[in-house]
Amino acid sequence: MHPLHELTLPELRRRTSEKWQAYDSDVLPLWVAEMDVRLADPIAHALTEAVAAGDTGYPHGNDYAEAFADFAAQRWAWEGVNSTHTALVADLMTGIVEAIGLISEPGDPVVLNPPVYPPFFGFLAHAGSEIVEAPLGDDGRLDLESLEAAFIRAAFGARSVTYLLCNPHNPTSVVHTDGELLGVATLAQTYGVRVVADEIHAPLVHQGFVPYLSMPGTSAAFAIVSASKGWNLAGLKAALIVAGDGAAADLERLPEVVSHGPSHFGVLAHTVAWREGGPWLDALQDDLAANRDLLGELLAARLPAVRWQQDPAMFLAWLDCRALGLGDDPATAFLEQGRVAVNSGLPFGTGGAGHVRLNYATTPEILTEAIERMARIVG
Image (cartoon, rainbow, N blue to C red; front, side, top):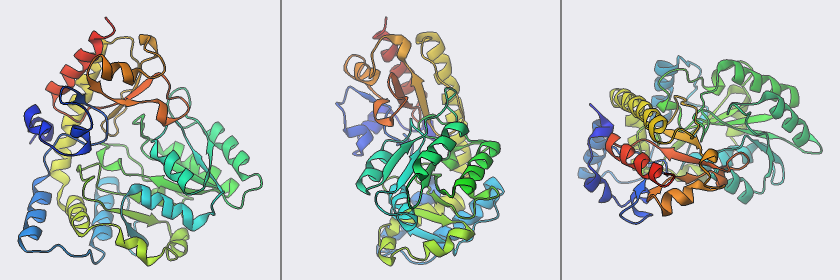
């Protein structure tokens, strides 16, 4: 089984999703976080059966949470998921905004670690939050001194402070260590900061992922989880807020109408992914590791001035292109001159200038051709 080897370029171009339709047909799209894979067979089977049975109503029950709890115990040795301390939401960002809304008021500060997933900025601004930055270190990892300084700044005159942790980190693909997460938990306790962890990319980490809520001192935190990224289910919306024991009472105040967001098909697909999608996920992780190695070889041979950290999370590469002489937004040159679409680093905030985010969850042939095109524009 090789999920990233099953589809041809003509087959992919027939897709109607954003990744393949946002640009002209001569562009190779390596940008938005969609993977070029078929659905895992158990998920496709479950959805096909539901359609055949006319089972197209509203979601019901706690199967999603129970399936996730089993997955977390098996994959991450995290036995602490209490499925009754969870809530279904439409997607990651809905869960983040709702969780933050339970523990803060509009105008209260939320600490972020840029460069970071751009919708964090937009959704938090829409919710009326004040954004306080604690940039990543020069090594692309959490800088606990910077984080502590941000907690102190944010706490000045604020009713409450929230820290939105990206675990693993998007766009750098860094997998936080248990030591780093313990440092976060210690700082959060010291300064009375509530933590909300985005863990949507966690299933893609082959080894070494540490759930934030599995660390000591994290009882008052929330995590937002979803099968969306691990099994390419962005169009089948569903996610889960998981509350630590100390945050369970806060979660009980979540309005019941929030649970109306996820679709029945989304909940069904994600539940099957958690329960039956392990073998497919293992095969995908192998393909991603091979593509990561291939990307490293291609960059060394064709774009040796590009710097990146070959971290093992996700399917995203954060490429430092500043030495190429393409300015603050090299993504524009790669698109206009090379006909390759990658994400501009600028929307990721501080530290994003001169960088691009490249999605390598595609076939080796497409990845190879994309790097060749990118290399040709710099000579």
